[in-house]
Image 1 (tube, rainbow, N blue to C red):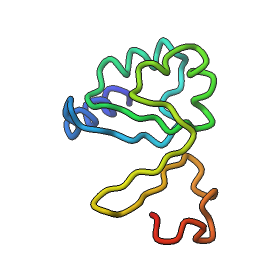
Image 2 (cartoon, one colour):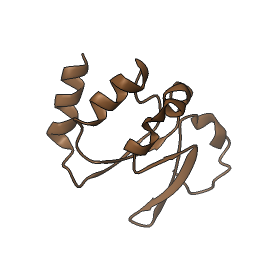
Image 3 (cartoon, rainbow, N blue to C red):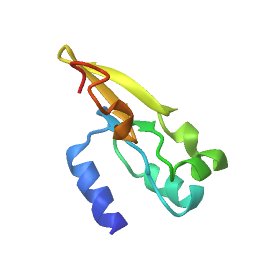
Image 4 (cartoon, helix red, strand yellow):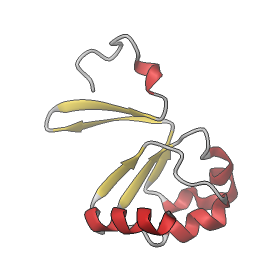
Length: 98
């Protein structure tokens, strides 16, 4: 399964692409995560998920461009809110933000 995921990722993501991963990046410990990260294309920004916390404490956070709990980006003047737990923006609290 992991090999297929890595192949599919690298088929569409180039070395210079920016990827926003919305958490739960990898299970299996920091050694496994580092092995996978070494093979993935792109500049990866990790919005932390609940299953990332243990591995982040074990030291693979430096493999990402940024690790953060939530963030806002803008693409073509459209504001986008990124979070592992989408229920945090429930009820239209962010107006015209996706």
